[in-house]
Length: 412
Ligand code: 5CA
Ligand code: ZN
Image 1 (cartoon, rainbow, N blue to C red):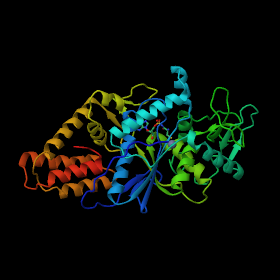
Image 2 (image 1 turned 180 degrees about the vertical axis):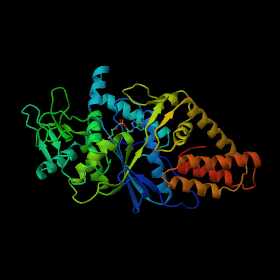
Image 3 (image 1 turned 90 degrees about the horizontal axis):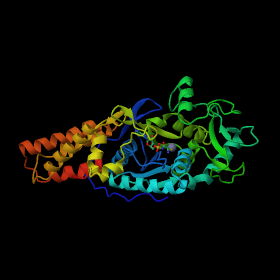
């Protein structure tokens, strides 16, 4: 499906150190080592409601990765999905008396507008689950043929499941013990009590057709894709095994990314699905997790409609480190607005202190596991110097404007 409008990236003089990121699977910060074309897959939205600041924070995190790679001269093959067939969509559509496809289309359009306003560099491939059903069918066939998948004995609804023990390394991505897996599997959309499963944590690959649910014909029986196989198929078919980064919020560490990796790895024996598994911390509101089910969402579109500058939203979300769970509060937005004003006043000056060193530090901090608090502080420092003590470099305000635009996506 169509992505959103592209954002032109300026060329920034100089170069920075190579990017290092924390890998959830290996539990350490280590270098990301892309080839000439860097590859990234980030889990996209389930479009039954508007983009909130938690989604935005996750996409901004990976937007920084994209910008750093481009700054380092890489081409970037960035893929993102849209889970446009799933229970929450049907439930919301039924509640509101609309067609689930229309609901999805509406929310995807709003998401595109939000991403464009936030100046998030669009993915090259933006792929809906509906568009990728054929790919999923092919994968399920192969998993059935190899014995990694099985059909439950249920004449009415012969659902297909994936054996959690199909790959030896299962569990390496999250590193969770069995008790934690059991708990999170039940909490995050799994069905441990489904009769006929060999193991309670075997995950759904193909849900046999039910009345009043959309379904697609398949050689193993009509139905619709499970969640994890959708991302496994879309990623593997576009960026292949051992792509550089699999990304998403930390709520996806288990089961979603564990099973996406396991499904794929059952098909690509011996190779790892992604080289780095990178997870953004969760954004909450005033002490509570922000989620659709709790109804405490701060929507990007609402903030925009209220006249909040998208650059201030970016700065507010980047003020905390991406891996930390953090709150969105009025104070976060007020601080971001003050900072934006500081940067704008300083870069509007005709001259300032030399900026090369600040740009070097900006690149260094970002390359160090996206240390945005330090990166923003380096720019604050330059801006305060410029405003308080002046400077004679007439190129400096322009250089800062370009670097902040290219690396942080903040337009001054
Ligand atoms: N469609 C699936 C992924 S395949 C899904 O999780 N959709 S979602 O709409 O629930 O979330 C979209 C993205 O935002 C995911 O990467 C998710 O991890 C992330 N996300 C959701 N809630 C938050 C939050 N409160 N803070 C940070 N990121 C979040
Ligand atoms: Zn996903």
